[in-house]
Amino acid sequence: MALDPKKMRELVLLFLFSLDLGAPPADDLVAMVRKECKVSKKYACEAFDRAKKIMREQISLDKLLSELSAEYRIERLGSVERSVARLALQELQEGLSPKIAISEAKRLTKKFATEQATIFIHGLLSAACDRLKISEEHPLP
Image (cartoon, rainbow, N blue to C red):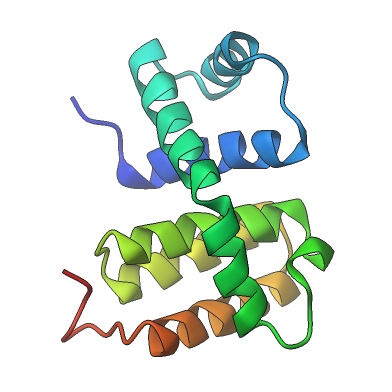
């Protein structure tokens, strides 16, 4: 039985947040998330692998985020907002529907940050879709 995509995104976000702040060793982090989120080792490791993939793309993702945000440098964003934006951009670049990517980013931001941050993330990701020429009719290949 597969893990609900919403739950998987939450796990990936937890790992991204932890990695952004300087996480403990990988085994300890995976064990902690497994225990706290009550998920199997398989799903925790899968989420951790996705987070590591996103962190390997961090420089290019952050460059795009910086270009899109005239008001804030990426370093000024909170770790939750930065992590949500990175996750959503990665999913957009992998071909996830913009409607789903933005909706999920807003849900995660609302759950783990603030309402004001949700508005900012929505605007940032809408601008990313415009910049990357992504639409519901023409997603990335």
